[in-house]
Amino acid sequence: MDIRADRIATLRKIIQNSKRAVFFGGAGVSTESGIPDFRSEDGLYRQKYKYPPETILSHTFFCEHTAEFYEFYRDKMLCLDAQPNAAHRVLARLEAEGILSAVVTQNIDGLHQKAGSKNVLELHGSVWRNFCTQCGMPYPVQRIRKGTGVPRCACGGVVKPDVVLYEEPLDQGVLDRSVRAIREADTLIIGGTSLNVYPAAGLVEFFGGDNVVVINRGAPAKDMRGVFFIDGKIGEVLSAL
Image (cartoon, rainbow, N blue to C red; front, top):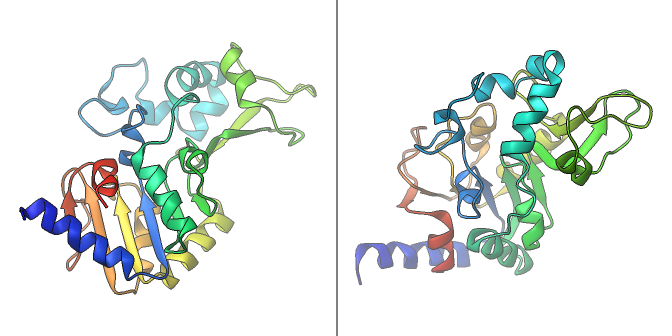
């Protein structure tokens, strides 16, 4: 048995012995579905725009340059036709089997729900939810994708995606539920993230269970001694279970 197969076998044993595992995932979970990430060599941060993506995706830019925000948002953030990959499907299966208690995700694409996961905690919101900033009415994402310019509610108010932009706080309710899920977990599986994005990455510090598993292309930026690490694509690793 080679090293990779041996590590897969160890991961399988850890998961099978878990009764309340939690998965904490980042952009690398969705790249295998064709959704670009931000920080990789081909990520959005390496592409050239009039403004840096982190500026465009800020609260200030949304308020002051709304039309330009939506031009970028429609072009790069609305991957509505993307489909779940092996990682999403395996995690949904583990939840159905009573092994996985929650998915805590930094992604905004809704692919975990598409795959069948029920308890999904979206730290950074979702492109599938959009609300009028004036009256609070929901607004269909399909109308945003098909439209041009700034989407407006029937009341005349500007529509905003329910995603956490730079300069905005995380939703406190989602944050509290994520902390509780991680704190109560016996196994924490971290996948597709280098743990660079705070405050979301700081949530792993609340874990006090027995096993921490990290599956990622390259070791995480955060120093996590004692973790069980597999260097690889999250979908390929989980599909081998």
